[in-house]
Each structure stands twice: as C-alpha cells, then as structure tokens.
Image 1: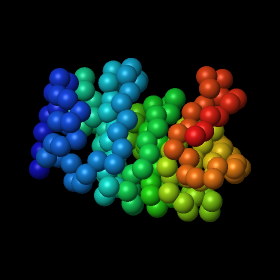
Image 2: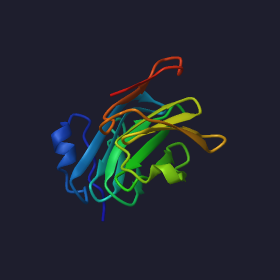
Image 3: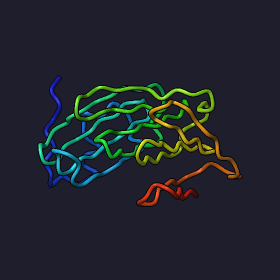
Image 4: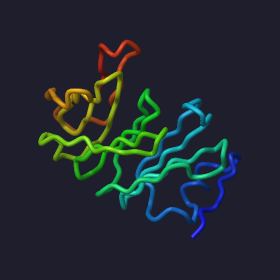
Length: 164
C-alpha cells in the first residue's frame, strides 16, 4: 500500500481526513523550522498511531505505533518527538535516526494529558506533574492540581514550569 503524497497547500482538515489514517486523529502538533525539515506536522490517533509529515517533502517521514490513544505530543530540542498516551506511557521518537525509546516509571499509570521538555527534563502531566530526568532516569512528582493538567510550558531558561 502506498501512502498518498501530501501537498503543502492542503489544509489541515484535508490532512486529517486523508485515506492514510487508520483511525480518528486525537492530537496534532505543527512545527516550523525543525532540523532539516522546515515544516513538520505530527499527528496522533485514537488507535495509537503517530505519523510525522514533512510538508516541504510532501510525504510521511516517520511512523510509530504505541499502545493506547495518543493524548499529547511535544517537540524536543534534540529533533525528537515526545508522545504521551492514555495508557500512561511516554515514548520518544528520535527523528534523526528513527530510533525510539519508552520512558517508564510507576507513577505514569495515569493518562498523559500533556508534555513539556527543556534540556534534560521532561514534564509529564495527568493530575500530577512528574519531572523526569532523561539522563539519570529519576523522577520527582509535583502535586497540587485538583483536576487534570491541560497545559504545560517551560520558560526559555527552563527554570520555570507553567501549568494549567
């Protein structure tokens, strides 16, 4: 089966309803000026598929299958895509070499509603926020939200994390 080419002038609605999707989209992330590709669109689906499209190349450049609905996507500074699932797992897809890894921690058994990354720290949110050190594989949990966190963002220096 061949994947249909994408025209950079197609609208987002045309992309998300194209025949190459296996399930309804659950999240979408656009990036301008990432690495060798000028425009990338990452899309997660309810069935756990992640596809990364290059609008400059008019084609799918990466695919990944995860277990469970994809709830969140976040670009890393190292040309990586962070993927959060309803099942509580976080996957890292390294776009440069196509390799992927899974971040695993007992505290991540809740749906991953949003992600933010700065330097070597990954913030993972459900009702609590887990700060995951990507090098040492250790974590710290921040609590205090009375409902699921819907938005995370590090400031430019990486010293402040904003959540909502």
